[in-house]
Image 1 (cartoon, rainbow, N blue to C red):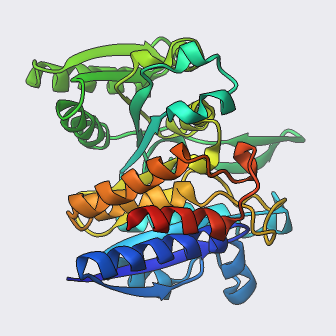
Image 2: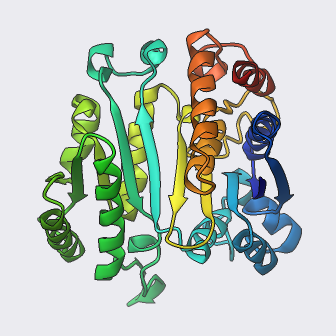
Image 3: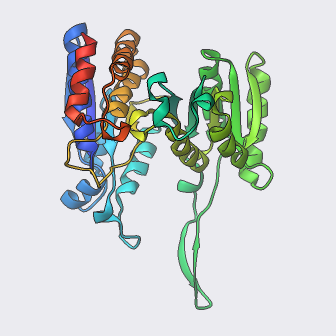
Length: 353
């Protein structure tokens, strides 16, 4: 089977972790007789340096024609100028919009061998196994109008949080679909006591819930859910929320696993390729040192195989290899170990055999 993957390694540690994920995919190709074709493109700060823009039309078109897109991370102090015409993060927002990947799936679980790496007490981590579904192409990050202006000698900045009903409905329906294959519980997160956009969100969640009576639906305000994520995270099964809330809550949830370097993500739409990436950032403080944790990126390739290429056995194989690697005590620096990025990938590949 021929599998075309577009690589967007990005900035900081992005190229380092993507390189190791490619090694894992190549091993899977040998084991299961698949032929992977990789093409690389620039996104973020490196694209600004090369082309003067965070994402080019040519790269967008190549991504649209790929079977799936695997990304590293974008950004860093070099491009951290609030007044800059373009910023690395704009490339990330654009590729999500161009690919129409409206739902970002972030599975969060805690490996028993890593409970001590989490800041939470081990007893709070028992049974943690959730998927956070974040709406990805609407809300505050994309709403118009937005900008800055001078009013009566004072500078004013403004953004708009807006949603269409169909944008809300499709991501909530995806959450219900995922819950049906899990513990059949959806928690819809909003701020309906304050925001009109959240009141529309809750209204549609109720409608979708009535159409799926076999799934338990509950509603939770975002501040309450933030508290629950650290006080009783095991209560969640599938958690669905709007763009900015999801951005914040998934970063909070990442500490449950002990390191942001452990967690993958999949961004999916109805048509076109999915976008897969670890949830961590570019980590410029350790870039080039060869110590970044590649596990989140490697697990992202498992999601890619499962959702974009429907290769469930191969995806399970990667996830089992990662679990075995952790059980055997392999650790990068973020988990208190001494393995390099490539050495950690070596252990995963060894466990694939």
